[in-house]
Every structure is written in structure tokens, then in C-alpha cells.
Image (cartoon, rainbow, N blue to C red):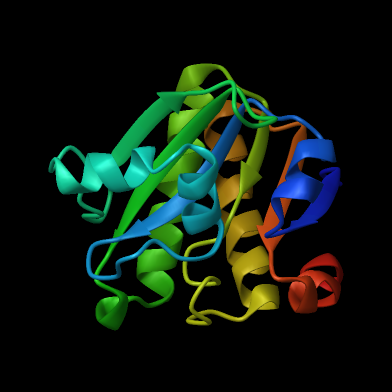
Length: 167
């Protein structure tokens, strides 16, 4: 069983939460300002993600990845993952974004991940469904590359904690 921690979208709790190699946040191509964990992270990083969006260095296209090093949060690196247009988001889009995150983390040599599940920030996927699809994608990754993820932190709304833990 993968050790999993839940953290709410709350900077104070993030500062005291368990560190991980990477914090992965979803970025939509059509929603500004950034929402959920991505929006809070952007605030903590003094608008760095918003600046990258304005400059066109990040746009939120499906499969897009941007890795940032930071010392302003408990996590060493931030992985912004494009998830596309929110109106087109579905289970396939969710799974693709998760696979993208897992592949990037594995290639970086990381073994711990903090993640805000795509679609949870705007309630496009239920928390229990998100966790099941995530664990499915992880199992597939580990069948291909061996067991490599040793710790997971899920960042979501407080109201989702029970659903995430029971999934």
C-alpha cells in the first residue's frame, strides 16, 4: 500500500506538510486566473506561473510540462502540467495528465510526489474517481518500470479528504 498523506489547499498546512521531490499542479488553457492549488502556488511564487502564462512560455495545452525549481515551498520542484480546455476535460484527459506527471517524476528520478489532481479544482471529477484512476495509472507505470513511487501527498479541498482516503 502506497503511504498517502492528504493536505488541504492551504499554505500554512503546506509549510508544515511532508516534503516531496515534486509538487504537480494542473494548468488549464482556458481558465484565468489560476485556480485551486495552482492559484495558491502562483501566489506563493509571487505570480511566477502567471508571468510564464503571460509570456507564452506556458499555455496549459494537454501534455505540456514545465518544471520549476523553488525554495519558497516545502517541495524542491514544481511541475506545471497542461490539461487543456476545461470544457473538453474527461476521464481520458485526467488519465493523460496523470500519466504525464508520473512519467516526468520517474524520469527525474523522484520517488515522492505531491499532486493536486486535475479537475478537482473545478469539480470536474469526483475525488474517489480521481484517486482510483491515479492508482490505476501508477500500477501501470510500476508494471513497466518497477515499483518507484514511495510516498504520495494529495492536495485537495478539505471536504474531499474522506473520499480520497477511502478510494
